[in-house]
Length: 346
Image 1 (cartoon, rainbow, N blue to C red):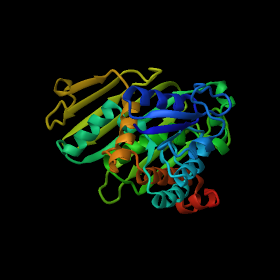
Image 2 (tube, rainbow, N blue to C red):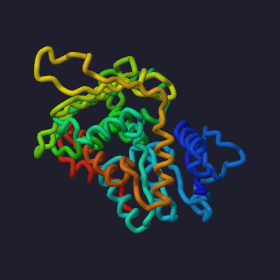
Image 3 (spheres, one colour):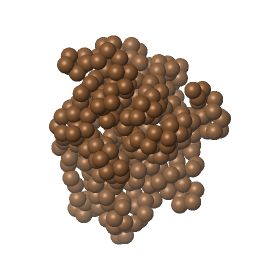
């Protein structure tokens, strides 16, 4: 059985640990908890270096605050470990390129936790697109938002030097990843971010984005926010001969409602919206964490990623979009934005 260490035992560290236990994808033999974390006493180690230096540990789950992800990933790869890291992979695309240079030399598996692509409805949507039953994607629209209160000020997510940004890099990045996962790259970006309510420097509370692939014409629209005062997830995909509409996202807190996917072929005669021709499926459980744990373990064993696993190339693509969105708002080129915000190489 594969042996894993976990660095960081907050909500995500515990979630990954639970998934490994449920799926038996591997055994957790050591956990490093940051101040405030409470790992099981029989697995707790005093420093993360203990995990990296243990020759018996095959892979590491990095479940840290955003600002540590890049350096921890590089350290783990250099230590000869397979790495599973939470999003975002780094603060900029330049940071991901630095990671990829180390990855190429290490020859180890590197997977990123974009779990939204592993939800039941998302898996079905990807299968439908790949089947070409409804033809190519014409356009997509995603809305993803939540509500936060004054306690947000006391968290690391309210500090740009720790979080890297606001709602875009927190939640919006998941929707961007779904856009890329289903439709491929986008090279045209229009964006606005705002600080309408919480007034935290460097932490946007809204992001409005339009994307387009100049070659295919496929377009996508994203709105992500932390000030709509309710949790909401909606993802719509319109193709040449049909459409898919996903409302809700099954999570442990159940705050985004039921995960319901509607799929239908388009109509050429009025009325277009004849709901009788739609098929609807509700996904009652969130299996994304288990799919990721199993995918990571299978990738290590076989040396080949499963379709949909979050590799570093995908991480680079999504961070290039994040760069472009922030750069568009700040009126500088994405390449210059990456260079200005890249941390010095070791």
